[in-house]
Length: 238
Image: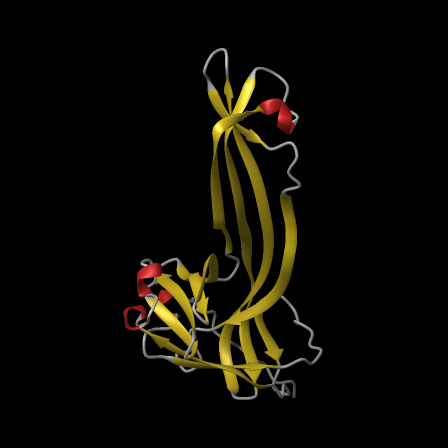
């Protein structure tokens, strides 16, 4: 006879995100694996994976860390070792980074890691500004130095760098791992990076000001990565 498998479609919510006091062990496997099929009632079999432990993450209260004041929006922190911390924020919208510290060096970094809620066929888009630099020119410089004709001066420069992430829930079913079988949603993630430079120009005749694209900037949007992830609401692995 042919066995028939029937799985349960799940929803992943913010209740399934890491909480203070949790410990997560991550493993890494460099083998060649196919992502399998999209759609309903799927089985993704990775039971033969033989990965080794990559990191042990302990989730702690950011107020107990040395750099809590630098990241006031963080409400949970992942401690990597005695000198490395990832500052995170959990909300109904998911788990996002707000920055990290390594050997005393501070790096603000905004990025959605695990969006919620997740249901089959959902598409979620997130755009984050990673950093923004504002420069004021005193005195203002003539706009023709930047190749801009007309009676203009430039008094400010704004440089913006960020990323846009798209999460598509394209399947549900069960994922088989060496440590068990779990109800899961499959998520196809695509990440793009962008940078943009803007100049604030002022008309020396009318006094009107406006922000325009820097004609000399090589900014734009570029693809960063695409990957599949599997998300479960099983509390033993989240």
